[in-house]
Image (cartoon, rainbow, N blue to C red; front, side, top):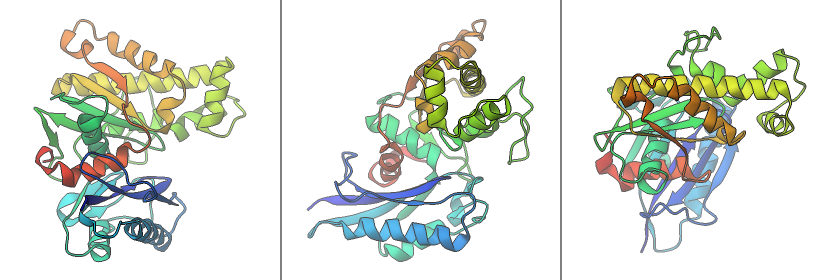
Length: 309
């Protein structure tokens, strides 16, 4: 008999669910996806959530069991009440996602954490940073999220939002952010914000994939857009390292693949902190996981409960 965790990952464009075993492996045929999106109603979002959870449950092999539900959500969240309020999903404010999961999968524990913490747990478990005691995981995609492991333990904070690097403000930028800040790294460097900035400069593409192709072709606006994004990410990482003395930052998410050069640009921004060696020493690496990382990390909330706060 195999013990599975039903893992759920809620983001700005999709919600996914899958069954994950104690080695971090997804059960083939158990991964399901449904759309979310900023224009979705609360009912549409709930329908998508119910759909992926029920479909994943339906893939459970006979004789096996589900031992818990791990939920990673874009933030902000409220851990104590099990509520989610993803910035890019305005129809869900204080939505009881944990309670929904508990109704659909009764009799087992459900744990909710921010998606950034989940990706960090996944990198620490089977990704780019096993054994690292001072680690930040980042997701650079529709939004920018993050999570922290400090002293070998995940740090969620009292509300569950510790590590929310996407809403750290960086210098030299005045882009307004939905959170109310100005110059937040998410408002500058996420995939949608980077493409919109490029469009305002006269670029004619529509998506992050288009921007990647334009960058590879040498388009000067695409190059400037990616450099702008990477610089902001590097500044944010340097600031976070100055605060909590990180050793490694592992970056994943769809827009992190826009070009391998993005990582060099990030590192260049950090290198400017050379007078502070404890900041400049931080290593920035690509995620060691495929797109399964957020689901693996959500499963880690149950399978590796001793690592979470």
